[in-house]
Length: 589
Image (cartoon, rainbow, N blue to C red; front, side):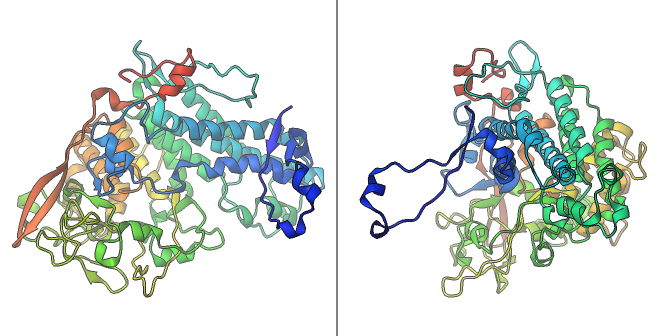
């Protein structure tokens, strides 16, 4: 018999418990699967298991496995794999267990949802069933994407393989010894699930104001405004929507069209551009860009996101939850009572251009001054990275990261000091106070999808498909997108950004600029590792820092990156290879 298991906590005291009760076993709360047909909350619990397992529910800070950051947390699994300890047994990038478990719950849900009495009337039940099936399909596509990102690759036979495609709920008697499907078949399944989600879900969850706004397919069922809002209204704003599903499709297509994956499937750069372009067009095109999007984590933006609302920057996010100071406690420098865990590298600092738009390496045009390296830079540099002399915390304290700093914020002063000469500033609420005498927390939000990610996906794909100024069927080009993003950041606004105008005539130079803008805009959000791999770029660039002493800036290697060529693709877990003879490992692992 198939079961759903629910764990409840029962508080009791000996004074209220008879001797018979103490020795009679309690009735376990183990319910037959059929019970869910009349208890919709039980059935919905299966679907909610998918939401709780979304990998971007929290910050991974896997940036420390790349050239963007190091950590002073010596037990970090990401640091270990970056320094030569990545194996099919030790793999913090593993999604095999998490995403496959989520898909198992989702498949279980899909197997029973048509039989669940979601409401007292058949018409409202039909709407609830549509919505939650749509959510399930969208989530299943998302988890399959994460499985492919972590585990797809070329086998020793040269085939480009994905993961097993499991569309049925598995039980104890099922045959779990599945072969891996091709990468192409997996991508087709992602697209099929997205299409199902699009067919069943609204673009967003918002209340309608009249019966005439009820979609035609529900008007034929006699549905009125109040019942429609009950199912598709504002109460469900943080759940999967058609818009979110479309963004997941764009995200998956960008990966599939990239150099490391293109040989294994039929997704083209034009496909990826079109999928992203649709999402952008529905958000208002270029004019839809959020002017405060670079600071989505700060007070004004976070406070606006109450009752499930989003700013125009955020497509999908985790609930704000309770006020907290955990993120700041991990990342603030020591003098602000933090542990300084994530240390941005000189590599990343060098990637920020000057405010006039020129790279710092273009000495003739940029005006870069090696003796004042943080002046006249892209404003995002000091927004995202705490540099020497930068301010942080509720009192705007100046932070001294020099070798001879009188505080523990100096380079390598104590275990919680920076190892690179820099501390993290992005994602942190500067109005959090960690002083034990007056500790205060604040609301935080963690995006699952930002519209800026989709803007950058379009720019990358459109440049590859049609060149820097080509638009395909859209009204905007890669050049238009990057120009808007740089203007928002405050780059090139006083001189017309001549560097951008220079590279718009060269696809290769525009490619480099787009990739760099993606690096800057999405830093510390868990993108860099995956981007380097899908671009077939070098993972082994050493992480560098800066030694500041007597106004002299000396660049030095902080930590080498040790990766082998076969690590372009991640492994299938070794335990799964041992258990199932039909699973073939990726080459090299």
